[in-house]
Amino acid sequence: MTNRNETLFEQAKQYVPGGVNSPVRAFGSVGGVPRFIRSAKGACVWDEDDRCYIDYIGSWGPAIVGHAHPEVVKAVAKVAESGLSFGAPTAGEIEIAQEIIKLVPSVEQVRLVSSGTEATMSAIRLARGFTGRDLIIKFEGCYHGHSDSLLVKAGSGMLTFGTPNSGGVPADFTKHTLVLPYNDNYALNEAFREYGNKIACVIVEPFAGNMNLVRPTADFMQLMRNLTQEYGAVLIFDEVMTGFRVALNGAQSIHNITPDLTTMGKVIGGGMPLAAFGGRAEIMAKISPLGDVYQAGTLSGNPVAVAAGLKTLELIQKDGFYENLSQRTLDLTQGWQALAEKHGIPMLADCVGGMFGIYFGLEKLPQNYGDMQKVDNDLFKRFFHAMLDAGVSLAPSPFEAGFVSAAHDDEYIQTTLERTDRVLAELAMSN
Ligand code: KE4
Image 1 (tube, rainbow, N blue to C red):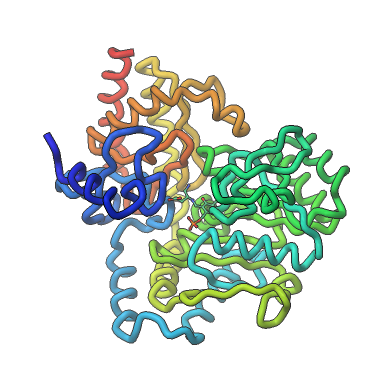
Image 2: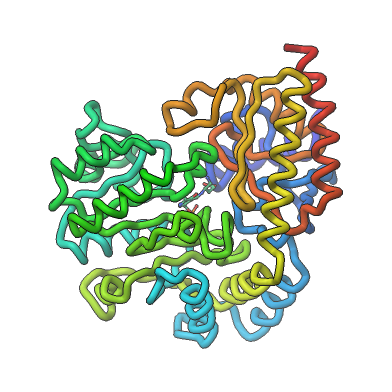
């Protein structure tokens, strides 16, 4: 029986590569037909067959106050009536810059862009321009958007430079990128011992979310800060996903570490195309038109996106917002853990603030990309589709984190757990 999602997917593939405008949406890791979303409200989304799902993708993080929040929609509509984009400075850009600087104390100056990829690409160029050095360090399993020097897999040896992990990226573009294992203090020490004064920056997800949720150890993060300080390298926290998600003041407030630059996105646009990079004023002073590091964007600081971001940043500062969000996310993951034990399904769950991970077939929480390679992808796939059929929408990949919003109240969490109970019971019988 074809349904409208299937019809639309076949139609989309005629015009759009893979039928999607971002690869993960094509359900490549889980198979089946992606749901074409017609509308969303609060904790729920509706597909083109009018089926309702409790949504834990949340547009991959931006929908933290819930979908189509009336105050956000109203703010966007109001500003849109005065024009969509001017290509000139606006007062709103000052306001949101002030809010970001207030909420992220390590940020003294900030530049707005339109995507997380732009933010990280620009931050790396800025670090190279500020230090006059070429080498960058990233970590296996961390994703920082799709700019060339970051589409790289680890070199053959621990301290050999990366090779492209995407078509169309010349080897030359990744030869300055060193890819180290996440949470590996020895590798980090060795890299700085070997290349210290040539390293422009280290870029890290301060809680990894792109190999599923993987926590860094405290001494790994502190070592990174100490070594970058000692060798004059720029420490970039890529908080595109963790910013305003794991805590109001981001992962850096949990680790109590001050990075030199921070990249942000997702939540700060509230679902509209808005991202940013910012940090120490002396580094930001190198960005054009002040300095010689070029960076630009037609829609940077777009007034409509800024309106959505400003209202979202206002709503997340309301009393109790993060206490409630963190508690509900903990209730969900602890409930999942208990149900997995009840049904004898090898599933672990973890969470930080409003972000969670679920892992099939592991005996303990993952520490790095290598651990994540041991997950039971087939069991995840079966769980994913059974949950989708039960009306719960999870990220369509075992390597993605999930997201809770303020609209996921106790009732939604309980309903999710009741549906999960039935799904795991069926999985247990078929296992
Ligand atoms: P965008 O260019 O997609 O706005 O941001 C890139 C990016 C940068 N840094 C981090 C830590 C990120 O998580 C992302 C993007 N995250 C993915 C989710 N895994 C976006 C979803 C997608 O690619 O469609």
